[in-house]
Image 1: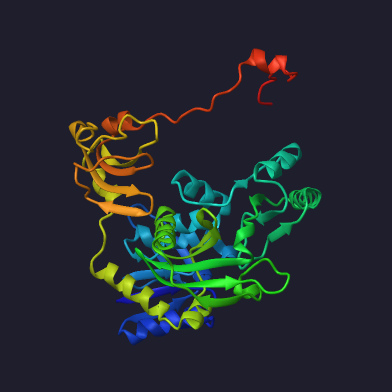
Image 2: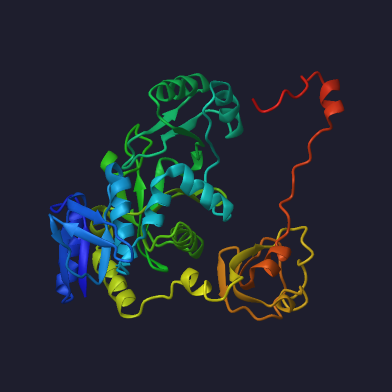
Length: 401
């Protein structure tokens, strides 16, 4: 395999370890500076130039795209994809994970545990936002930031308002997030490769520091994750469209709470802590994908017009609850159930005699029109009648302006 490692830091520990692991396995690997590429676009012939010369052929690309070059870096990765070169992380996945708001929106939609979060721009919305996430203390985060930079703890509502107002005055987009007190300055970093967690460590903040990042002085210890934490880390990685990621989780009283999914995780801390060959696991995974590539399902589906893949959620009030997959009528609509997600369990090719429960999610393939009819309408929150609102002293609605 000929592998390109995209990195602007050729001497960094992670870059050197990946290069070393690839060469130890007999692969040809080169570190290419992401910013030295030039993208050529021509009808039917996407191309890349590197240091003013046409790039030679590569079998795979491992992107290590820093936050400061996200736009150009993802453009380069996307060009590799258009040239049919396997990319360990796609441009779409990197973009999803890099934007904290976008990633939380996606994970929330897929019922992944996250700390309660709010994003607002109007000054009038700040105080209600703080109250809705549970009140002070709260965590305030810049939407883009790494290694704990741009993460602040506000002990009181007044200080939170001041910090947010200051950041917004500097044209910064900020998130207000519930402070998960039971985590006690600790978090979990799980290194996901493909469909498994290859290493995990617990990071503990020191002294008065609430951020547990190793770069902030946190101390790391190896940890064996239970099934719930492993499954959450893998699902979050795959939902965002990544294959290699560092998943940061808080240990909440209701289970794992995803803080962030990092598409270019550092390897030094986790390899030193666990004494595991994480770089080797990444290279082995990439080599396996090059030898036996996955079918791009989205492209294949265009051959069968009107067919596709979607997820059908079974809420508590659904008529599917208590029925088998057969009795639900799903198979009668020319729909095949590929996978059943139940809590932390993933059940591929479920038996159609299996009884459906509230909260189940069904990954299905079939006619899109038929599947749309099977997806229940989102339950709407009941609102008070306008007359009652007026009786309670509320002003009449003035529109959305």
